[in-house]
Amino acid sequence: MRTLQFREALREAMQEEMRLDPKILLIGEEVAEYNGAYKVSQGMLDEFGPKRVVDTPIAELGFSGIAVGAAMNGLRPIVEFMTFNFSLVAIDQVINAAAKMLSMSGGNFGVPMVFRGPTGSAGQLGAQHSQNFENWYANCPGLKVVVPSNPMDAKGLLKTSIRDNDPVIFMESEQMYGFKGEVPDGEYLIPLGKANITQEGTDVTIVSFGKMMRVVEQALVELEKSGIKAEVIDLRTVRPIDYLTLIESVKKTNRMVVVEEAWPLASISSEIAYWMQKYAFDYLDAPITRVTTRDTPLPYAPTLVEAFLPNVKRILDAVNSVIYR
View (spheres, rainbow, N blue to C red):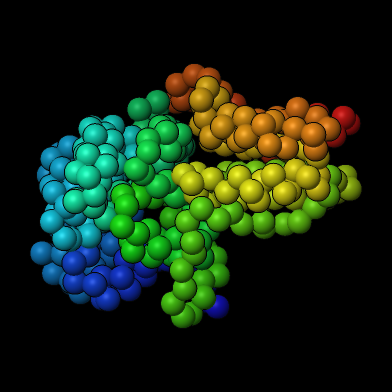
């Protein structure tokens, strides 16, 4: 095992796949000459040239449409959004073209491509640059939605996403690009739709994904001090969701807390709560509790940012409430 930064794991995934398949290209703002806004694509222009690592104007709708057309005609584009907040400019191409094309064309046109970039809060970036849209994209049939939480998963899941014949939304975090973690030396793939049980336990199931897994890990330290044995599940993908793993965990722990960096209405945690009450109701000894962001636009003041986001205290309070402490 090597230790890599999150950005380095993503870069390795793209480089390895581009070396294997000349039909793969990377397109987006500042991905080439500037080596990527967050240096994820550093050195890739030198290796693959300007026809496969393509700088674009600040025109997300335009270059997303070009990439969809390229995918329909045999290429396999990776589209980098500088932030998924900017993907809203391109959402017509993502939802109405990429996601629907295979169905609308009667199977004649597949759209094998990846839309990737950072999501969520990254500090004092204001309300328009700090949003989570995992649940928006997961709502759309035809898309797969991946949200890795560590460098090893980032590489394995991105390689799988690039090889997938359907469009994949691959959501990262600006704050995670410098995070370090162990990454296997050889080639490996991680399947989409299979959650990872990162810690086994008997008292409560804690479910999360992406950057919030770091907050859950911090909360675990405090839970262990108080003798609570939590089972922790990293979803990895939010479309498809690995409901079976969640149900089997609830059968063992009888309680569930879902932690998510998103607004509470119609969120991924809402969907999980529905499925658990439908398919694991007889095993639940307490209502499922959700820890989400506050139901407001994200403020700018650092004290309000802290109050807006899920944190250790809120997770501990949620766990204590479901185990009736």
